[in-house]
Length: 270
Length: 130
Image (cartoon, rainbow over all chains, first blue to last red; front, side, top):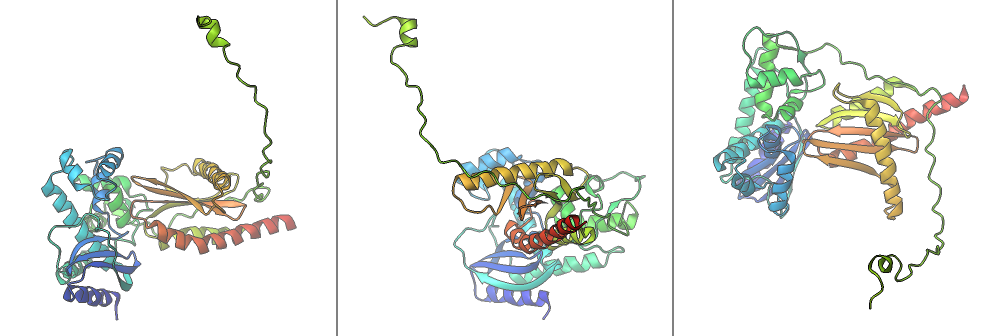
């Protein structure tokens, strides 16, 4: 059974059972799907930026502000109320970010390798849940449709494979995303890495990378740059362990004598 | 030292764990041995920071009776930096973005650290033999 079939069956069973909990997907990048009454309300994957990354990397809120919001929310991973109250984002915007991140994580899991699925019940509230959950079948069909659309492009790209570099200066105007990708593509980053760096969805970025490769704005170097390895001239020395702590002997500190400086400044009490 | 094997281990780890952006291996005193880092990162400075960071963490573990130091991880809003000791001769630095699963990194880095340790120890034996 293919990894995709494995995931489809496991998720469909969760939907049928009206299950509430986490479906952990092992593989590369793998991830976790959080369900409530058989509907997927949140998804996380190392392969796709979550709502927090999307907000922080877009510059809508900075790291210190985020830390403050998390403190205000009593340590919650997704301080939605604070984000709205402080005017960093509107309620509708947050809903869109959460839905996009959920679908993007599902896409990343489906686009990668699925080794297995395991149900787990943890009492914790899923991070950044959407109000209306996605039916499992629709979520996976949407991910598979995106994967097929990507494969049908003239220069198909996989989110975790190609590591492009800028190819030539563009003649025409560039979009903000294209400029960001040209800035960050250094031959080390995949489309997934670029998505995290730019704070955009991994599907959006992968499609854009594919288009830019086809247009000749980006290219894939034939060989990876070798890792420079040097050799220490006298070999590597072992770390000298610190001397064992000396047993503490009581030291006679000079005792403070009453009076002294205070009496000198203020005189003796009458 | 088998440079090729060391480079393969470092690149292998980056490909095995999603979200790793850079890796470096240095001697315990902070002298850089190998770096798979982006141009924006100064690998020599990073190696020195890692040696100092691990030294401080080791002393802290000792002073507070926390046992043998395993690793240190610095978490930031844009990712994290993990420093691992490789035996008592070297150290490894792994930088990751926000998506990197740190538990998965620890699981994957254990065997890689053992192999990197063997590669570096082999160098020592060769150096002593010459």
